[in-house]
Image (cartoon, rainbow, N blue to C red; front, side, top):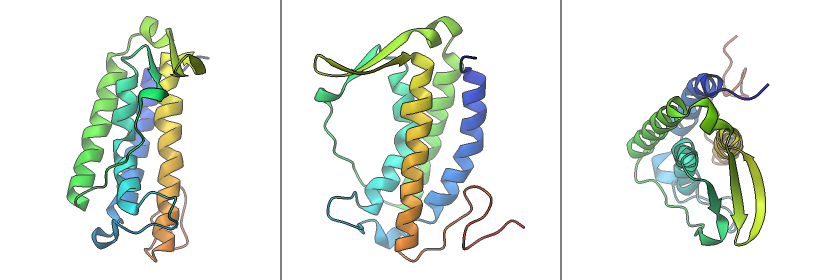
Length: 167
């Protein structure tokens, strides 16, 4: 059964508050912390997490994306308030893009390339699943690990955490 935009919007609506809880725990005085020199800073990772849905939604309107033209530089956030505003705008953009995506356009093929080499080819709707939501969950989980390493109590993502329990 193909993905539907309604299902992805419903998932986005469930996952956005979870992501907000994680981002709300980001200590404003630790944006420059990083677990390893090859890792993003906590501020860069948090900003990336806040931006992913909106960035992925922009891909929905492209026929593809050439990674060879992309500079992988990640800005940091300026404040927790700005970070949460970015998340709100990002989720709103993703909802709007998904709501506007009709069935025919959703099924059209989309390509990710590196120059002339094809990296991925998928129906446009799957762009939101893989580059959007799956990518979002991956980096949100990474940010949860950063929080743990910084000594910040980890919020509930699914079920309970070592620091919180809904039971």
